[in-house]
Image 1 (cartoon, one colour):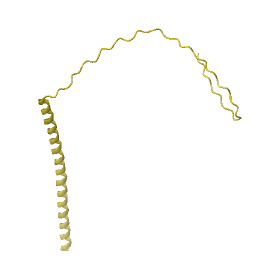
Image 2 (cartoon, rainbow, N blue to C red; image 1 turned 60 degrees about the vertical axis):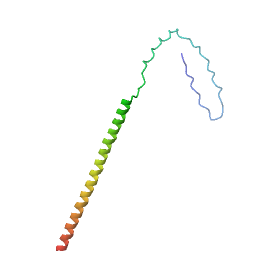
Image 3 (cartoon, rainbow, N blue to C red; image 1 turned 90 degrees about the vertical axis):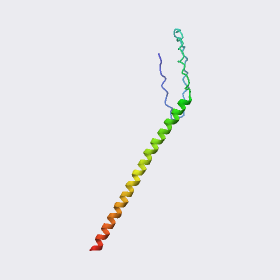
Image 4 (cartoon, rainbow, N blue to C red; image 1 turned 30 degrees about the vertical axis):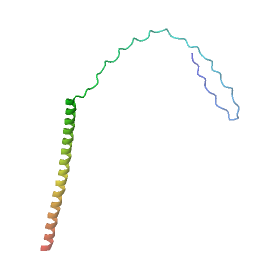
Length: 105
């Protein structure tokens, strides 16, 4: 059916072989098939209507999210600050205990 043409290696002497002529093949059309049935159009989706009530609900929900996230972040900041202060107080107490111990001797 199809016979591949294997290319020849070029010779180092500079001789060039003539190019191989490829003969065109005929294309036999297949049997005609019926065109596909038309596809029904997608269902129409109505656009979202923003009423004053839904706009108010969106604003209220967004405000609630911002307040909750803000409260969580502030509480985390306060936890870090309180931990830092308590560590500093412990360091001062230990320093004073160690300093008073060395003075007694």
